Every structure is written in C-alpha cells, then in structure tokens.
Image (cartoon, rainbow, N blue to C red; front, side, top):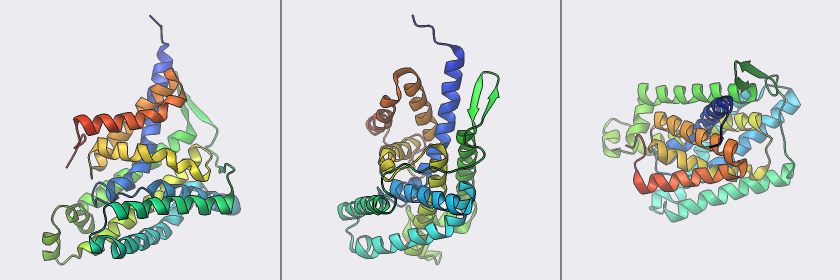
Length: 292
C-alpha cells in the first residue's frame, strides 16, 4: 500500500478549491446564457480570452492591475453582449432557427475571435504583471499562492453579486422568470426580448472579469479558450441549469477532481476529467445537483 503524505493531500484539496472558484467565474456567464436563456453560447471561452488580451494591453500600457482593468472593461463587454444577442435574435431566434444554426453562429464567433487574436498578437504567450503574482502565503503545511488566492476571492465576490442581483432585484427576477413563463413576464409590462438581451449582455460582461483572472493565473495565447469549452458546460450541467450556487459547488467539485488527478496521476489527465464528469452527469443525473 502506497503511503501518501498528509500534507500532499491537504495541499491538493486547497489547490482544488482555489481552482474551482476560478472555474465558477469562468462558468457563471454560461449558467446565465445556457442555463437560464437556453442559448448554447459555445463562443463564451473566446470572449474570456478576449478579456484576457484586453487586460494584458491595459496592464502593459497603463500599468493598471488586471482586476481593475477588468472592471473598466465591464461596460464594453456588456455592450458587446447586447450587440451579439441582437444579431442572434434577428438572425435566428426570431425566425425559430436558434437550434442548429444558432449553434453554428456561436462556433463561428469562437473561431473568428481566435483568428483575429492570432492576427493581431500572434501565437506567443502573453502575461501580466501584478504584485501578487509570484508570492505565496504559508499557513502551516498549506501553501497558498496569491496568484490563485486573489482570483478565488474575486470569483466568489462575482458569483455572490450575481446571485444577489438575480434574486433581489426586479430585473434579476425577470431574468430568472423569462425561461419559465414569458407570458407572465409580458403581463408585468416587461419585454421578454429586452430581458433576454440584458441577461445575455450580463453573461458576456462576466467574461471581462474571468479573462483577467485567467491571465493572472496563467499566460494565455488565442487557442487557450478551447480548453474551457468542456469544463464550462460540464460545470453548468453538474450544478444544475440556471443555479449559480450549483455552479459554484459544481466548479469546486471539478476543481478538486482535477487537482487530485494532476497531483497523483499527472496534469495530462486533468482535462479528461471534465468530459468524464459531463458524461456521468448526463447519464445518471441530467438535471444536475440543483436542477430547475
């Protein structure tokens, strides 16, 4: 029997929790677009990489912290999301062609975004500078790298803020209701199309923050977003469609699984975990942990 050091297990668990919180920030936008609006936005990771590159530009030229840069980018990404939804609505959803053709539309957006980034920045890895990238806190046997801890705290704040918005405000409750009963929403003098556009714009706005957190954690190049397609949909389905608390818990579970897989079997096996989890959830619990 192999004797596994206790400190290795504890650090793998902590690393998984930190990674899971970051995954929650990456997935929360998909939980809104796919989980609530039933829009399969495959291009979501592409928008995250776009957020990473814009954070890189602002950090390199103005010296601003990547997280501060992401907050400045929120209105831009919100407007971008509203524009993308309007094109999607007029071209596909309004005509009842939002299934296969709508999916192809977002696939196209993903590859166009990637190609544009390659043409502008090339395929070299880009990274940002911040005071917390590099140092670590050591608490007993636990090692807390600040480049993971800071994104974890920001991600938790993002999920909490969105949960409060969706449950405590009129627009948030309208977003939650638009997927359940659009007629009731119309009786409350709210336009379902306008509410869906707002919700989708919010989902894209989260990419600004998720992109900044991604480039803090690791250097990025245009094709990195492909690695997260399986993860975000696995977490979204695992947590339950439209449930932000479920998204957070599902992300934590996947982060822990990937951390233990990387620690004891090698990092090359970690990406397969997301797809394995997705297949198991679809087979045994399609509604997820907190399915609607």
